[in-house]
Length: 326
Image (tube, rainbow, N blue to C red; front, side, top):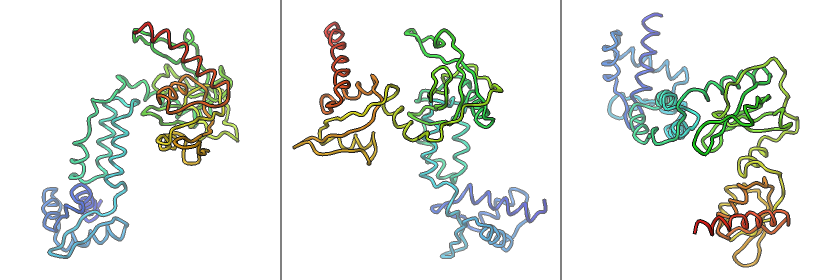
């Protein structure tokens, strides 16, 4: 590479790492940096290099108010966008502390060093629940390979005993699975696809998958009418269970919570003073009934009767336990 091309790359690096709107660089600053890098340059060549960067699409802002000063304007990611990505990296239950730190280091290169210093101050990786090994990362890589190859994978799936010991589900059952798509929910990574043993679409948490292996068996494709958004909404908002349509009577103050959970298109109507009805499809599970219970009476199930009965049965089963605890 000739000296001119090499110099332009160094000028670009300096501007990216050391400038933003609040921290412009004078021509003398850039020249001093190039001297430290043993790259010959002059004020004229620096100006020419910056013009070439601008012509190539780099958003270099030239401030002529007092002296020639330059800074990077638009970046691939703006500071607030980098902040969002950093929060995801540090909160991820999928990434180890080592992986999180490595990813955060890469993300910070999208900001100037001044912005990076500010962004890094708010990071507390050790305060988040993290895996202790790379097993989940390796499992995700294997699942990616299976998706690309359109093949099935086999694996075991584990849970925890009351004494926090890992145990494989269903006596070390081997699941045969056709992976379709990854989904990020509640700071965890899930894989959605067709399970042979279940005979339907199922989700698995990637960090609970053990010993995955790629097979030569063609994967079962997702049905043409498979609605990923609807599946994710039903499964992750209320977890697994038979899908039913329920009508809830809610206090008016809960409208924001209902929209947050079910979306702005949710079907609602007023129910006299202080209440409204909402009709939604949910997964009739303990998690759904627990969510209703947690509202402390602000949410009531009014239909169908089977859901009313199931909720009542759950409350009745909880009473002896509550009395015992008292």
